[in-house]
Every structure is written in structure tokens, then in C-alpha cells.
Amino acid sequence: MPRPMPAGLTSIYKRRGGFAPVWLVDVQLPNGVIYYIASHTGVYPTRLGAGPTAAYKPWLRSCGPFRTTRSLRTDAGDLTIQNISGNTIYSDTVAALRNEWEGALIIVRRWKRELDATTWEMHGFATEPRLGREYITVRMLQLMDPSDVDGLPETYQESCSWRFKSAQCGSMGTAATCPKTAAACADPTRNARPRFNGLSKPPVVKNAPPYLPPRKLYYSDDPRFQGEVY
Amino acid sequence: MSELTIIGTSPADPLNPDYPLELPPLPEPDDFVAESGEFFTRQRNLSGRVIPLSWSRRPKATADALRQMFDQHRNGGFVSFHHIENDRYFSGNLRGLRVSQSRYEGWDISATFYEQAGRALYAYPSNWARDAVFMEERDDYGNDLVKLIAGWTWFPSNGERHGAGTYQTNVQLAAAEWNYLGYGFRVWSIKHPSLGLFAVLLDGVLLDWQDLYAPASQISSPVYTRQNVPLGLHRVQLICTGEKNPLATGYAVEADAIEVMR
Image (cartoon, rainbow over all chains, first blue to last red; front, side):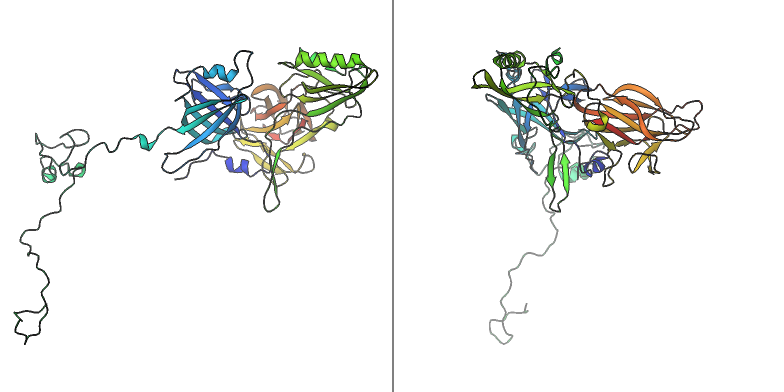
């Protein structure tokens, strides 16, 4: 499903000239401190904090490239922040980095000034801050990593795993207990068959003919011929 | 205030750089040329001019004065540069000062003046005929240059309006916005017996209300001027107030063009 675009974006991008979009970065450290950093100075609406706007510091040197994947596992990008401004003891960015940045929540937005709207947004967390003489680079990883999910929440088995009459079960029947079989679930006193999450065995057909191997074909005048021909 | 520290206070100022000195334009936008050959531009650099300055064969006193000024304002300060020939002031920083002696009592000095956006100017540019450019409501390809909010109607020019036409509305609180990189601006519009009042905002701050009523139709001319604006990316909004002069017959306002100082 395509992402919805802000209204009026098409008419803005049709123009032959205009202003480059602004990169806005909202960073919330684990201790709750929020920094607002952008590629161009200005006052912009925020995504973190009380808002609705904040003065963004023009510390962002570069943003991205950001890679996105269908599996979400390796969505990532780099942020480069200047490390020059400040006093003779600490640069501004290093002073900020004295707090723990590992795991900080980051929201990166591509802000189109003519539209006063975001055209692209990514949420992630910070990791691997690398300090350089002029720049500081922070790696931004996606919030959800499917590899961090430990397997399946339940085992697949023949019987149902829901607790009888729980919200997942949904049975409103009159029975007080449930043996957790498919037949019992379909019983009118329980009537929760759509919620049954066990794996049923294939149904057994009564009086079915036994399996017979294919018979050899003989001519009728052959002494080994014993009856019908298949 | 640092803008009071001026390089070139008068034609007799020994700190005047060598002339003639051609003023470069504001930073050019990034160009993208499609395979068809069509140009698309995006303004990324929002800083000011980069002006190379030189002082040739000057006495040592001039070299010392420039060196001292450079050291004084290199950390968190800015100075004004007065271009004597164009009579324009710029606020910014000196960088890359080089001083060398070329002969006895003759010193060659060079530096680059980086104009900084957002700095107050000693005096704001006022030569609209020479230094200003127009921003119409549409570009030459028919795309809107102005952002329109609520109902605006396009009217082709009848010879009275600036450019190819204008947008008009009588919807209260309908707004037209221009974004520009520059200094001050002027709003152009016709005046007409059927037009009302509009409000002018700069960067979200209300500046004034303007009455577009006139007993007889007048061709497009500057109806509002805001000159004292530092260099930067600015947003001009024209908002239909829904009010009118008691003698006017209507409430409509027009977004014809703005003239921006560059």
C-alpha cells in the first residue's frame, strides 16, 4: 500500500525551482533529554517533546543514505553531526554526548518548506556513536528487528492452546470445561470453532475399502488368471 | 553591535579594498538537468555572498588594522563590509587573511568576506530598480510559485496586473504565500473600487493591513514595502481579511507579485 503524500506535494515538485528540503532530527536520549537538530536552522514542528514547535540547531552535516528493506531487519542509516562549535573544553555535540546516546530514540524527517509538511519519515534508535575531530557519526537502526523476536509465541499441537472462555477463545457456551479438541470446540455448548487453534488430524472415513495394490494383468486363457482384469 | 564595525566607512577609508570590485550574486541553486535537457533547480545553500577582497601595496598600518579586525571578530563575531561603488552593506566574517610585504612600505593583503544570513545590517539595501527581482504567482511554465490556501481564482492579466495574471479571492482568511531568499520585499497589486483589505505577514508575524481600494482602477504598483529585513529565507503571506474600505464595493484581494531584494 503506497504511503499517502501531503496534499499539494505534486504541485510543489512540478516547479522548476524551489528550495531543498530540510532534514529534521528529533533525538530523545534514554534519560529523557531531547535534542532538535536539523540541516538548516529554523523553528519547525516537533515529533518528540511537548512541542508544538522547537528551534532546531543547524548541526546536521549529512543525513543518510537510509536503506529500507521489506523484512525490516536491516533498515538503517547514518547521521553525521558537526563537532566544531562549542567552548574551549567541550564541543556542543560532545557535551550532548556525555549523556548516553546508545538506544536513543531518533525520528528523522524530510521537511518540505514550501508545503510545511513531512514527505518522508523514519523512526529508529541510535547506536555506535563515533567521535571524530570535525564530525560525529551516529548509526540509526530500525525500531523493530524481527531477529530479536524469539520464535513463535505458542507451540502448534493437535489440541487448542487457548484457555477455555478466555478472550482468545471467545466461547460463550454453557459448558464449564473444554477438552480442547476440535469436536468439543464445535459442540453447541461451546461453539467457538472459528477460534480453535489446534491442528486437526485428517477426518477418518468409516467403511472405506482397504487399500489394495494394483493386480497384475493376465490373459483369460493364462492358467495364472484368477478373475477380473483391472 | 558588530555591524557597526565597517570595512569601508567612506571613500577615504584606508581599509577600503581594491576597486573595481564586482559583487557576486547570492549562492546559486543546485541544478539538475534531465535527459531531455530541462533544468530543475533546488536552492540548498541559504548563506550570503562570498566576496574576495584584496588590498594591494598598502602601508603597514592598513595591514595591522585589518589583522587586528580579523582577530577581534574571528570567534563568534561579524563585521560590516561597505561596497563603496554599489553603496551596499553586508554583514559577515572575514576568513583566510593573508598578509605579505611586496615592497618597501607596500603590503599586499587578501581575505574573503563571507556574508552571513540573519545578521543585522548597518543599512539595508534600497535600490529596488537595480537589486530586486520579481516573484510572480506562476513561473514561466505555468506552475504555481505561490502557495494558495482556500479559494483563489486565476485571472489573466488585462494589462493592469503584473506579469501574466493574478490570483484573486474574497474568502476570508484565504492566504497566499511566497518563500524567497533575500532581504526586504515589496508587495505589488492593483487598486480597484471592488477590492478590500489584506494583511501582510513576514515569517508568521503580522506587519500591517493594506487597503486595495481606490476610486478608480490603478495598475499594479507597490502597495506595501518592507525594507529592513536581514538576509535569509523568508515567507511572505497575504491574507484576505474579509474587511473593506467603507467606500469599496467588494472584499476581494489579489496576490499579484512580490519584489524581493537580492
